[in-house]
Length: 154
Image 1: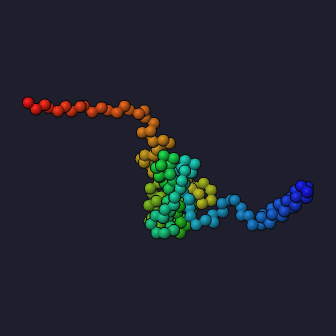
Image 2: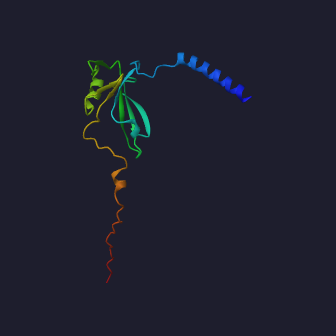
Image 3: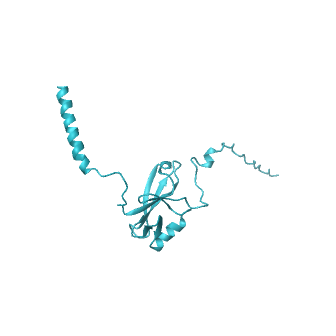
């Protein structure tokens, strides 16, 4: 009975593979999305993500990431293809809002693959490198307050 079952699953699996190969999309990025992705920090450093619309709905979005310490910061920017275009290896803003976002970055976005770009974060912004500095310090002994003595009445 197990031989019949394995033969049935093999034929079923081969049929599914053939049928699935037609419906399966290629994993290559073909510039078919609605946004240009400008990565600021690597995703692996964060534990949770949120997307926020900036300005008009659906045009520019900020993807915020939560560090393991609980702090939130920008992971990447999503700029609508209506607000910018890709020309000669450079992302060119078409609207003032897109220009403002690109000007805030710490470097000019570098084209990686497809709709993906990479840039440095804004300069002079302090970020936690793992645990908060306060938690790294040794615990200090509680400072004792000087005792206030009451004056005796005479």
